[in-house]
Each structure stands twice: as structure tokens, then as C-alpha cells.
Image (cartoon, rainbow over the protein chains, first blue to last red):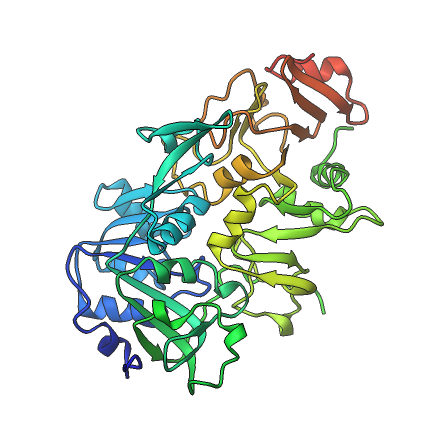
Length: 231
Length: 208
């Protein structure tokens, strides 16, 4: 069982197909798989559908794949930070499916857990509910949302061991675990790969069963809103 | 004098009760954290996966792995816990968060809320707002009573696409505090110098 690869390009070799659905972790620019995104750009894979909470900014994160017109459709909850995204969306070049953030996270979690659909109150009475099955439970109305199974998941973690057990750091965890679980194949990039046996098994956030390929590298970790108080 | 932004935040902070887990939206709601009353201990949730949001960092403390839902750098506290987005919305959808204080574009007398989309304008997305209003125990809206043209934002019926239907419990504006009841909006409090007549005149919705 070899999960550790030398580069993002190696780790994605044989996994990329035009028209595929990719699930990506990250919230804003925090905890995004920046090396794998850059490698997908370099590979030139086209007509991608991407499920990710956000769409990066113009020159970083998933914004890189928008610049190169590799994305056909985004499934996201919030895309406000990306001018190129808006341009392509308004000109009809890019499809966009808005999902409420919690529904998006649960769609990934459910897909990864073998649950094809779930009922939620979120979105009842809004445009999100249009065309979806409604069902009452205990005098409350719910709508049916589908689990997502992606062709490929790309995620970012803090540390991994060689078997793919992952640890995340602070709020960089965000969508990475649910995104990892919903892919038929998951590639993770981490800041450090440590020898198997050196991580406390009680502190593993995502077991390696969900992670098929791994790379280690340096991350830019760009900050969107640098806010400080006086020292 | 009607309330200003800080007065509204201070008034909204009176909604906090000891031991509550609370989610604060972006804008005026974020300021509520500055006015938590003495002796009241609340834990703030950030929907990107954090309970126990600390103050903004000093320049030396900035950590790109530690941000709030507005993507601002923040710090952690002794009590802080981190978790993933599915867990974060499980606690929201599961009713574990007692109170959400949110901004709004429009609210109506049935408690319908619109705060995510203006047709014809750039749509950024609803983020976690629809999940919050559907799942959180009590939803308090904080906003200016009228828009910049002086038109009431407290309506008989929302005109913008909804974030949630019948979800708002209380509305705090620069003019005072209104509660959503099955008969209409009930004036719970008036800002200093604002009369009942002023409030009614500035409100399109039925005031009872």
C-alpha cells in the first residue's frame, strides 16, 4: 500500500478526466488544497464540475481554474470574492448551483456515508426548495436533499502519516473531512507526512481509509481579511 | 435620538443569557460581542468550524489557519473547540445554538426574512444564513428601520427572495424593538426620543 507520492502531478496521474465532478475542501482561502488545484490547472482538465463552499479569489485557489476556463459548473454557498467568477457567470459561460452552506456540507457527508438523500428544514419556503420533494415530520415541513458522490476529492490537512490518517489545524479543517469522504478517490495534500505510528490514534481527525493518495509540500496560506487589534 | 449602530448592538447584547451558545452574523451583529453584559458568559460559534471565538489577533498572533465565518483572522480562547463544517451545521440544524443575531435587507410581520439576494444585482450566495434561520432556537434581526431612501424595511410581506419563512422572533432597529406575534408586530421597546407614532409611521407592517 503506497499512498505517498512525490508531487501533486504524480498524485493526480490517471485520476483526471474531462467533465468530472471534483469535491474540494476549504473555506474561503483557509485550508484549501492549493497544490492540487495548481496541478489540475497545469493538467488542463476541462469541463469540470466543482463542489466547494467557495470559488477562491481571482488569482488563487479555485479562481485559477476559472481563469483558464476549466470549470463548467460550480456548486457553492458563497462566491462573493471572485470578480472573474461573476463575469463568467453573468455572461452565461459558467453554471452555478447555490446550496445553503450546511446543506452543502451534509450533502458531502451523506454521500460519503452511503446516504443518498436526507430531509432538512433549511431552505423551506425559499427558492432552494423549488422542485424538491417536501415532507412533513412531526408538524414541520422538510425538503429532500441529495447526497453527493464526487469522482475525485481534493483536500488539505496539516499532518498525515504514511497510511493517510489525517490531522487538521484550527479552522483549516472546515469542509475538508466531508469533502474527503464523498470522493470515489481522495487525494490529500499536507504540510508534513510523519512516520506511521508517530501520531496519537486518539488525535486522528480523519482515518486513512478515506485517503488514497498523499503529498507533502509548502503552502502559501493566503489571508483574505487580515484583521488585528493593537498589541 | 434613535439608536446608532453601536446602540443597536448594545441593545441586541441584552438578548444574551448566561451559558448561551450564540452565532453572530456579519455587520452590526458582529459588534454585539463588544457589549456582552457583565456576569453573562456566552460562547460564540463560527460556522466554519469553531466554538469560542476570541478577539482579533495582534500582528504577532495572526494565524492563516484561524479565521471566522467572515474570513477575518481571529484568536482562540481557553474553551475553544474546532470541528468540521458538517459537524458545525449539525449543531446549528440540530437546535443546539440558542440564538442567532443577524442582519437583514427586509423582514415582514410574519417573521419572513430576506437577507441574501437582490434580483438583478450580483448574487454572492446565502452562505450559512438559510441553515441558521432554519435551525437556531431564536432569531433576532438587527438592521436599520428604513433603507437609504427612507423606505421601510419592516414590511407586510417581503419582496426579495426569502432566506427563511416565519423564522424571525425579534427585530431590533434604530427606532426600537419589535416582536413578531401571530397578530402582527408588537412594540417591545422604543429608542429614546422615538414615539409610538414615529415607529408606526416608519413601519409598513402591521404594528399592534
